[in-house]
Length: 226
Image (spheres, rainbow, N blue to C red):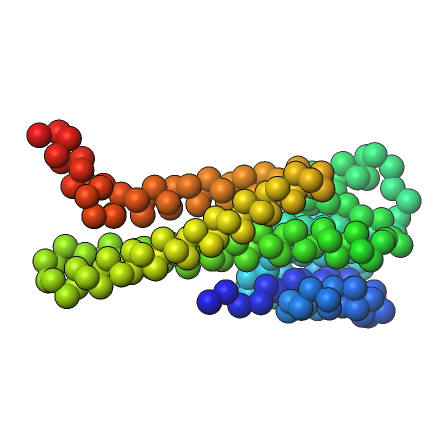
């Protein structure tokens, strides 16, 4: 079962962290504080996060440098980063943020509803990916336990396939609804691309499941070749 997603909030000012928590508490996810870039990198060593809200101006390691470290790590390189800044920045400053790996760049003071909506999109994508991994894990277990020829085990495998198919159908339906929502809301290109990647993964998993159904897959392949 997919647990709550973790959202990493990085800012050196406690009042800013408190404000972010107040805005995002309605999402009912786990909010993790970090008061520096170094503290954020330590948190990323042990926990998985759906999205990172990262302040640009911090003493010591600033947001750009922190993002660069995050993107260099294989474990964390795909985590979406939303930069938050109070600087009246120009195009060059914004470009530096996107070059550092940010998916969005929001200036303070920001609209709480807009920030919450943007974070919600990435939380939804993260949850769908977690569900997909869960389905893939169940599929691997089924494959590893197959081919033993026992009737009882065969019935159990068929039941597991049916359960997997039903659960995958639910994820597919949610992913389709999310994609339509992104299209309707004219969401960020990064979010749309991530949703498309998720749909491709779901399609691949559906094909793998269909191949395992009785009378299809390797069995039908053999008969077609003979």
